[in-house]
Length: 248
Image (cartoon, rainbow, N blue to C red; front, side):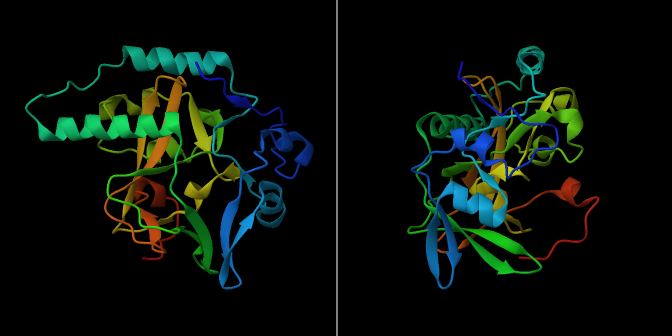
């Protein structure tokens, strides 16, 4: 079982509490941000002070998340009937292959260069491929944030990120989750990807046995050229309580 990072913060998570967050920062980490007609490499502390977002490439566990909640999810996952693998279905093989790629990427790390760029005041920032193109069906980053109790997040990231690659029946989805991921105060490049009805990437949600928790991995749907924006379809559920999105 992987030891997850735990943050000892108050419920009102003060992202500017440097003394608490510093111990989770990789001093070698650099966040690439397009600014002033060039891409600047910022340290996590500089990024935190300028953009008010704590940078983390691994899940941070909220203090309200207990071992009991995570154990409940592990037990629920074991008891839910899984969709059977069909040896005669090319789709079943593709699903198994993609899930295996995502798990390997989580275990071995992602090595796809990315950067963020401010597009305009209406859209805000966007996520772009840096230095090289991203091949089709390539896991390129994990969607991270603070792992919180699911009852504290009515705008569930886990439910928004439903994909056809998951092996859980749709009727069982809402009963599975005791936790959720909140990328608003903390996260990585994935939190800056915008919505499109013609996405070039998808988020795959699956249960990662090695860490014993749900994880979301971003994967390219097709080739994403260098300096092209990375876009996801957030899904209709996301826009039920929001304004009509800007079409990209």
